[in-house]
Image (cartoon, rainbow, N blue to C red; front, top):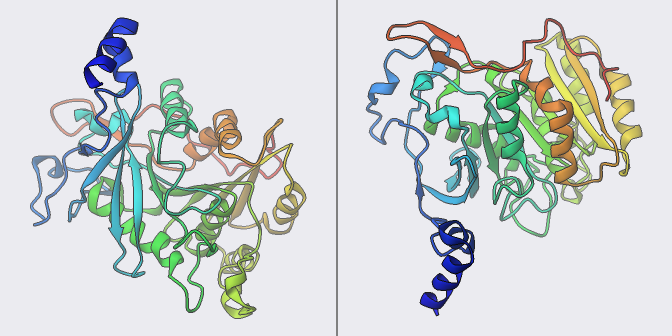
Length: 362
């Protein structure tokens, strides 16, 4: 049977057809993202001479299995993370742009975009299980056009089972999904990848319930994360698992968190909402913008014409403006330009001289 399938594939279209047929598939094989420190913490030669503000990988090194390969040769890898702080164990998918493995960037940090899915968000993250939604390609195309930074995409599960949603929070008596996303996932990224020491290289994106988690985390931890693309989001926590625990809910309520941040006077955070014209919720999003866009809270609305409540619509919105917007408020990687120490920022959008106003809807 295998021989017959191979012959058919080769007759139909040669090696490319055979690869598409899956006969030469390397899915499930090991993936290595650049050169990193080993579990003993001994640095490779790439970790010497890193630029200021660059955090080289600390280890221990995670083992990644390939889940997809894009046409440009970049890969999505999956690993299982046992969260030390949350106590939760779940899968995380990672995609690195071509620039990450370019020798010119081997001493440079890369901006991190933690991408959260909607729906169940367990046991998979639909942003990472394959390139079908186009998120990775949107970043690659944006880098080529100079409209996007080459982000590291980190895609964890967001819920602890298939029956409940946890609002990306530490709900009393439940798995600590807030700590998983705010602490364990970033610690894992720092252990395995070259990242920025400051919050200027850290951001979230997410859709629906994942958008709520992304949105909430930037407001709750503005000292760690600077920006977010939040698509089709709820504005307040609504999981039935809260069981009326108002005090705990308030600690994870974006409205309460935004007001607290405004009173504190900073640090500044940048929130890019996305909403499709064929979905509900725009009125609640615009009300939040009217009520809380002041002081350190900067907001923007990307309206997606004929957009629906799904990942493909939200990726289109990112292509139409949101990726360029978030790229202007985060740090770019720097490429070495010579044998010594000279570096230059990677191509990308020109940094915005001032916050994008709330009225900048498209």
